Amino acid sequence: MPLPFPTWRALRFENQATFEPRVYLRTLATAVASQGVTFFEDTPVTDVAEDDDRCRIITARGVVTARAVVVAAHVPITNRVLLHTKLAAYRSYAVGVQMPTPADALFWDTADPYHYIRRQQIQGHDHQLRDYLIVGGEDHKVGEIEDTTQPFRRLEAYVREHFGREVAPTDYRWSGQIIESADGLPYVGLNSGSRQVYVATGYSGNGITSGTLAGMVLADQLLGRDNQWSKLLEATRFKPLASARAAISENLDFPRHLVTDRKPFPGREALPGIPAGEGQVLSLGGHRLAVYRNGNGQLSALSAVCTHLGCLVHWNTTEKSWDCPCHGSRFDPQGRVLNGPAVSALRREALPAGEDEDDDDAQPRPGQSAIDPGAGRQ
Image (cartoon, rainbow, N blue to C red; front, side):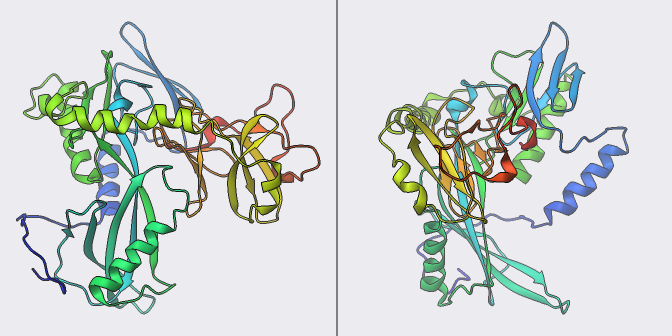
């Protein structure tokens, strides 16, 4: 193996390719637009309703009707329970280190949590290409880790151990959201209980490949053509041998969090200890509140109850977001939706009397929402 550390055995996949996803997507969008398709960005969809022969797509900017709808969001918003019992949301982490790299290949191990290694060339300000080593992995379920700096520290330790290099402060770090299916394959096709609504989800981090495959399958289904992968990927499938154990273990988290998140939380005494730019769930006035302190030191509060199915959100210190551990919904510090399946913002709440609030987020007038639920993006 072309790696600077010993390996035991490997499986090699031939005829693979690497390409720039933004170039691919721009070219695809241009080709589709030339066929008369219109794109509406910054237009969150909050619901899809099925009538006898038409669908209504309810958005923040109006209602669209169509014969059929494809919900290709990260997590479909059209199915609150059935499909979500077969999906699990994970955070995945990566670091980039400027250094000579192994062969131009993608390597990954079978550890749990796993790691992957690949090379990336980045053009600097002097227009010179430089090799970067990208090491990723250390996945965990959304909202399950309080200190989300730990996965980065473990990846940095992995780089030091296997490549003998420190990760400098100027190097790159980021995380992303991965949606895992119960049996390892995406769910593509008609949604459960639907006649005109199709879904595509559960790509397990292989979105470019699986998303392209999903597009091929859905196009054939909408046009009434046979497709050799339709049955394999159908969204309503449940394969006991491949799915049962994963589906049961992943969904134990939902009732577990509904119970354990009702445990005692710190109270008003914890307010002074919240640093600027950080948040914490507290028990104030008999309610669980998601309290955030902005860069000016001002405090604001939201309901800590996720608007999807009622679990409590947890603070993500590296992404500065409120994350739901049950089904992966995420909200920004002001409660606006970042990731579905939630479509509504966290409700604004009043802090105990005497505590400063963020003047930029004044209390709403009666009947007025403090946060536009459509302000977030799926």
